[in-house]
Length: 299
Image (cartoon, rainbow, N blue to C red; front, top):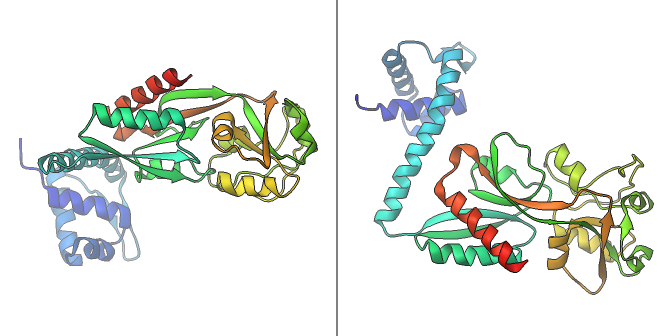
């Protein structure tokens, strides 16, 4: 096996991001001419052009784009192997970065504790995710996995576990007439202004978790907006609006000035543990198993 031209590969990967020889050189602390030399050397090594250069712009050739699609995941995997080896050599626990929407539920907290006991070489670090943006951090690689409200239809993500299937609830002030009901029908949502969940989550996710119409198609009026659970609940407590939350989040956020009323006629809510398919490692599956076991023990 010939020696891997790592400097050429790294230069190509950065150039594919920047599409600019000068900025690529700045990131790699080399001259623009050296960038050109490294790319030319890689092209000669492969036997075809990877980058098309004009006086005004730089872009990947069709072959270069295909090469990038194969190279980038392999480079990330190799870098991860090296980083993991360095971490183990220093006897520092490998971090597993997990994001949560709104709250760390009892089953997940129990799972974190059990997982770290079973895998002492791994340390779970947590990050709260915006209510209306469950996928951006995991897609960008800023976290390793996310406990998110379903549905998840992103082609780049794997849903390794689905759990906590429960009815959806409507949060209302204790002074709202709906607070006297044991359950409301989904069609009654047209009779109250809902606080919509704001954020860059996909449309299908918003339709499921912050619907703009009832199942029959009646328009649901909206007022305000919330990017976090606490923002939404604050609006609910001081006005006559409602906020749809999954039962698990409702149970975690019980307060004296708000009532959570089950909604009949909406699809049940569920949580999922998701991660990027191309970055999957055994830690993901082990953590999913820990959540599943903890959830079963608490049900």
